[in-house]
Length: 77
Image (cartoon, rainbow, N blue to C red; front, top):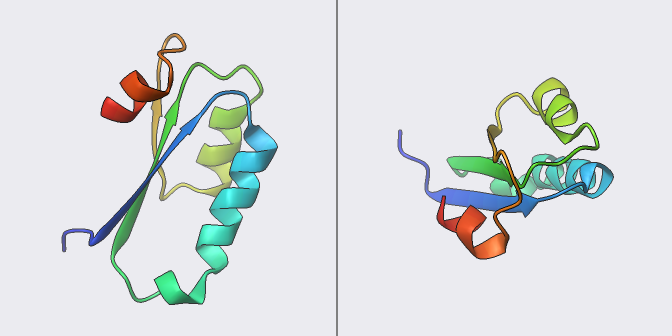
C-alpha cells in the first residue's frame, strides 16, 4: 500500500530533538490508521543521530548526506 502521508525531516546534529519528534509522531493516535512514511535527511550529523534513529526507529527511512547540503538541497533529495 502506498503511503498517504510522507513526513520529511531535515536534521543536522539535533539527535535529542529528533528523537523527541519521532517519539511524538509514534505516539500520535490520529496517525495510527493512516499509512505513512517518515524520512530523515541528515546533513552529516556528528552527534550519533544515525545510531539513535536506526536503533529506536527502524521503520524510518534514513538518508545521510556526506556533507551539509543545507535545507533546500536536502529537502529536494
